[in-house]
Amino acid sequence: MESLDRSNIKKILLTTTGLSSVGQGGGISSYVHDLATNFVNKGYKVTVYLVRQSEPVFPTASVYDYSFFQIPNKRCDESVLVSEIYKSILALNPDVIINNDVSYIAGLWSVLDTKIIRISVMHGFKEGFTWSNFGIQGKMAIYNWKYIDYIVCQNEAMVADASKKYHIPEQKFCCIHQTVNFVPVQKLKKSSFSILFAGGASYSKGADIAYNVAKELKNTSLNFEFHWCLPAGKYKKYFESDRRFVFHGALSRESFLQTLGNSDCILIPTRMDTGPLLLVEALAQGVIPLCNDVKSAIPDLIKSGKNGFIVKKNRVREYLRIIEDLSKKNIVSISDLAKESYQKTLTPECQVLSFEQLFRKNTSLMQRSFSSQNVVHFHLYNTALYHKVSYVRILNKVINAFEIVMTDRLYKNCFKYLLK
Image 1: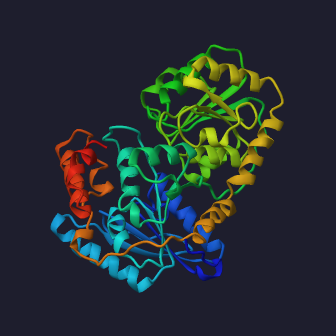
Image 2: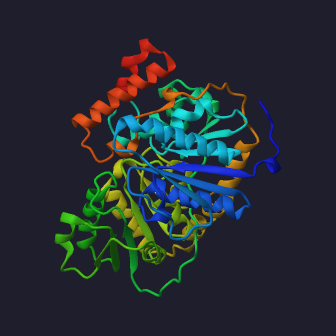
Image 3: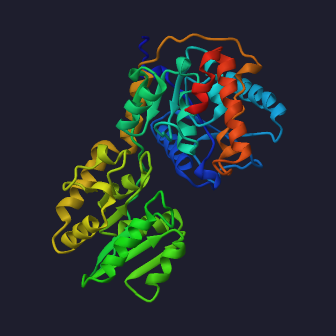
């Protein structure tokens, strides 16, 4: 294993399928923008490649360099795109590449200069057989893993589970939790206990659980306000006449953080997540998180009863009991512990420091010659809008599996790739 001096690392390339500074929402978009900004603030030269099937878009405000690569509509034109990306990387000559779900970069891992530190970030993972986007994201992160230095996961469970599922040595993986660039909000004086749910009408985010908790609260004598962010859909009708329930719909990030900062606790009954980022945002502002015990960063970051609460099996009555208890006592100590847990391990400085540990541990990897085989056709964006059993999605998965076995000459594993 080759040890690298931190002073030798100057240029970092982040590649992504989404970017918040060009107006895109979603976890990857914010993750990449914040990570790039954090690296720049620590003195690195950072370039972001956005690879996307859309018209060219450009950041409204950013501190990093930026290039846009448009995914062509025709599959036969993708080799041209990959060649353009490859030549651009050669010209940039980065010291580090951090890939975020760009399949074409995954296809290029094996032909890049071995002096480049190659890091792949796993933004989703699903155990067992799956057609879900989380499963696709997991497979994209480990593609060509023998030519990757590190695979970064966003929680500890993912490290162990992904290593087991994909039969990859666990030392290839590391856990670096997502963080948030936090600016304290102006706290408003209020007389009632404030609860926030920010999952809209999403089942995966636990909207039905939040709805049932809200129904139980409605029948209590507690002095409370229940704030619901993102469109609530059918869940809104039951509470419209009750002023204790406020439905905000979609808010700007600034407005949302203001609403979050003035809440006492936040419901996070998510059923599937890697982070979630919402948890980090809550801890940063001392808002007490009430979370489901789903496999995610939640068990890594929350000590139940100390800096937040973990509710087993999303039990509605348990959420209600905790809210009732918190509303009746001084919650300053729990709030302070929430802030402290953020400041100790989740600040932007902590995130950059964790990545810097990987910069010192580059491994000696093999290198191939660039060829048309380095094109990975199955791109997340091409399938994200399709139903899980649609013809196009299934066809793309078959093509991807075929391409993997053709590239690595693992013919006997064809069906294994299809079923993962």
